Length: 123
Image (spheres, rainbow, N blue to C red):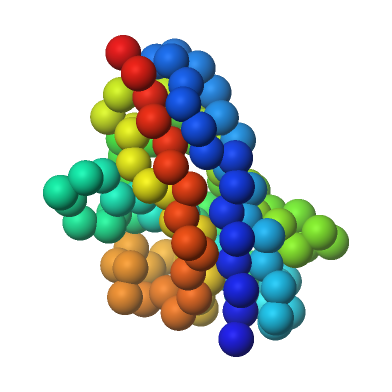
């Protein structure tokens, strides 16, 4: 199986930045598409962004376009999410996920998940 561990979450003021990391182990990281999802209190888990195994293709949910950047370093088996210009509505638990198709938007399309890291943006 693939183990995924997120880190980098925390409390930040609106307009600030955070960089999340997801460390992968247990299988060849470079062969997996990766994605970030988030889940706010009382809401369903929602697609944020994803990236193909080579890093050549990326996908973004409209609300984070031009603010968030997904990237991966296959030599380090690590996925990143750079979050800039954070807004209170970005507050959620952020989850790293691995799967086959980076264009998939549904959480059910991803096979492996991290434990999540809390991002809280204060107004």
